Image (tube, rainbow, N blue to C red; front, side, top):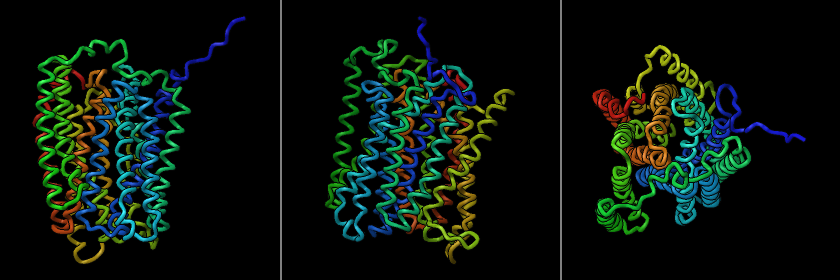
Length: 506
């Protein structure tokens, strides 16, 4: 009797792409439902329910959304060395679900001032979300890249499909979580985000067979990566020890200043975190420089340099969750044709545009590539930063008019349209670029490095949002627009050097 053979599910395709990309699409969709649902209501929860002032709330928002993008560096390292991509993703899903439910328990009280005096569950929820995101985010993006062979022209299109999953979740979550939080009860907004995270875990767990064996074994345990397993030399240990020593001294100084100024241990920890992040960046670069060939290091340099440039883009873009959310809540007439809606619903505008425009941009890049006219990745990123600058120049008159009364929603809607066009020039192609340039044995770790740009950007976004009440929206948005325009110009000047470092990779 002949044994029945079944086709490998990981080889199956749909609409010209591996089925695995759609598994990752839906997993990421639910994770983004969780993240953006919580992000849409966090600063409103702090200012409208806990009655915290803008400066404190903006600082907490910046620390949280920044650290969410720091831990992917650590999660990527642990995945590459020990866990493997798939285990890390499953662990991240469960950890983030626990974080959302901690926030729901904290917000269950009907007395916001009482809840503000007992922040233990609140801090626990944020910490669990930060840690869980570290396990999840770099590894699922790296897994997308592994679905396509080197040189596969479908790779950028695959990342665009994946990016649409990000934004389907981001679109739905403010509508659901924002409405439940602002119109029913704050705790229900967080609880619904937690349920979304659990659905993401179920999706990945039961359909991961379509990924084949990708991401099951840690990269460092793969036979092809054994070349990297030599112990660290004395010189390497010395350089990294020097960086660690500087990090400890700097963190101790900033922590002491934070505690001396406020008498709060939490504020002391918040003060020392960001110097530590800076030295983590330096330490990772030193580590990679000792482990990569000259050609590999040239490409790693491109990842680090472009990460510095995109900080400006994301620090402006993430005003959506800080100063632009406050502008929507306080200075915008939130009604269209007589229909009034919660201010958190503006967080769904960008995802609507992403889902609508992503296929157009994906087709545009393919059309240009066939004619050998496609811009390089650095050129696309400069275009994205320039469009973000245009968005803030556009809203500037609206911010000036808001001094006399609430303004039309069109100011925010057009701003989000322009930002979305910029985002599609920068974000999906940036993720694709990292998977092309990073040495395979450091793929998840360097994806974490890429997300460090978002960490710094979110911190800056929160700090900026905390001062909007003092300097006014118009002054802030003018400054952001000018800064972005200058950064875009500088990036265009260094594109030739970046392309030489990329070694022929487009």
